[in-house]
Image (cartoon, rainbow, N blue to C red):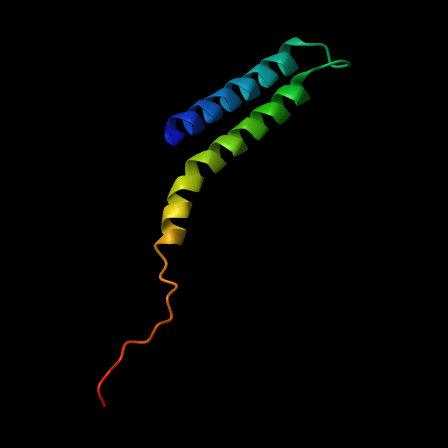
Length: 75
């Protein structure tokens, strides 16, 4: 489920960046809302990537052995 949410956020970010590009090209140069599309699209894409990467990073972090117990060896 987390991967689906991350993919949707990345897709929404791409759509907003695309809307920003179109707004920049179509709109007049004095008042353009393209920067808002760029910013929100980039923000959503970063959040989507964080959601996608968080699961594997957590599993990898949990796989690191932290017990420093030494095994008893007969000498």
